[in-house]
Image 1 (cartoon, rainbow, N blue to C red):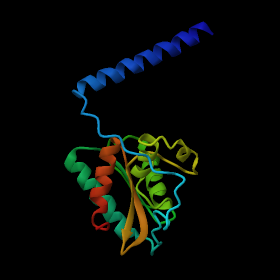
Image 2 (spheres, helix red, strand yellow):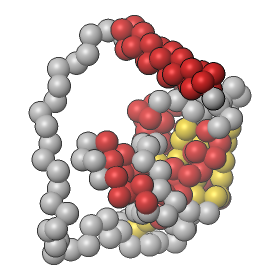
Image 3 (cartoon, rainbow, N blue to C red):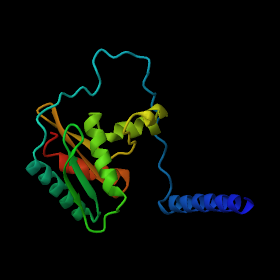
Image 4 (spheres, rainbow, N blue to C red):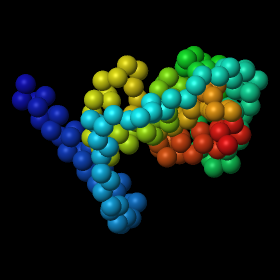
Length: 186
């Protein structure tokens, strides 16, 4: 039992040291942003937030085009990504895995796309709710993912699907999805 406890403490100390070393490599921290006031959860909005009506699901051909656009942008930047495009229900229509892309990110890209479609909002909104405002209740919602990189696809004001990218940092994933989705989300 003592050796197990010692191993856990040693592992935790190692992870902490690695995290500090990585932070030092990235340079001095940026000046802290002004704190944001958390939304009032007791307020009753006049309109339903994120109430995007459902449209005709994105076609396979258009979904393939979005995957190709994401892969082209990823290639340009030298990032290996997994890209998933889903319909408004979050069911997979098209998927692409670049050579060398992180294998764990296959299901994560699908999950990000599914959440963006089903919750009708970018997954960054959920990440912000958890990270910036401490809304930990979001973690209890069915199928939740609190990580950016899922973008709803909205055409003519209607939700036609979503795209999810994974394989890099959250900001890299989001940048690739945003670039690919720009042909639809104008």
